Image (cartoon, rainbow, N blue to C red; front, top):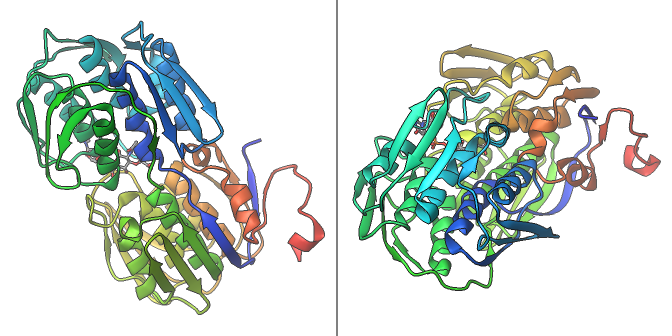
Length: 427
Ligand code: EPZ
């Protein structure tokens, strides 16, 4: 049953321990291939994308098992070098396995991951980086045949600070002779977490979090375990849910700096934000005013993944909020669902102007992608009446038990056909 029914009008109150980061754990799971031994990934969120990554590892001949929030991977028994089409298409970020498979086996066969709801999602920068290291990559009808006769460290200048291309280059460089320098590297916190994991495997990596990352050699050693960073986009999502519904939430186990651009935007809109070393508290107890212009950029700029979520928080804010989406060409697909709820949004190319309305009304909408679906959930929390969100499977790719979490904070989120919540919850 993938239709969520959300009855709006319930304030959110309570404490949230934010899940491990999807976008940190996926490249770390790919990196486990380099180890050739057992690795333990702690604080690993239960997500369909993580399941897909475990399927890929098992297909390659590795062992991948979950015990609660720990995923144990043993890549010693790796026997294959190919990722089949169905697994590639199940999760487009599977391309992140390419660099690690090459570094370990010097050959790899996979298909183009293909576009997704956000746009074409090309991988040219990934392939150019691997070719710079000495990989021969033949592209034939959507298939990629990759091999190398020994990767050699080099200087890789990325034309754009692509997160995935930076990660693929880092992983491949671990199998290269000599030093690799990645210039114009992505600076996202997930890159820093990957560096931390690679160091624990015995790789010499430095510079993650800056635009220049160097990798010089890799001497595999046994690893005890790595605790994945908390998910900064889930943190941003929960803040925006509070802004939509009203109430007070405290996020625990987080790094406030990781999502400061979102916190600051909500503060300017009239929310109260308290930052401590490992927690952020938000209080939303008054009508909000429009956000200042939001322009998405690579980290440390405003994250594209939080753009739909902040837009949800702006739907009833007094005034007009301007959004400029610079990262993906098709990232306003949540606008249609928001308009069906009564939002006033004008879209022109990569810009969207949101003029706050007094009320939103529950409607029948569909999730179009992961963060767009989460944004419709946030908007529904602040709408009058019931919103039905179809295709909620998109949301499960990146959010662990979001329905249960929101209900624990006072919301009313049900799967269609589910019995109404107990009376006290419905009060
Ligand atoms: C990562 O995607 C994240 N996914 C995305 O999160 C996130 O939105 C994105 O980084 C930007 O922060 C994971 O980490 C699994 P990019 P990625 O390469 O690596 C273009 C979510 O909701 N580009 O930084 O694919 C690309 O088309 C997801 O959790 C090329 O042109 O992002 C895009 O316009 C969505 N050629 C821009 O660069 C390439 O070879 C940024 O892409 C690679 C990218």
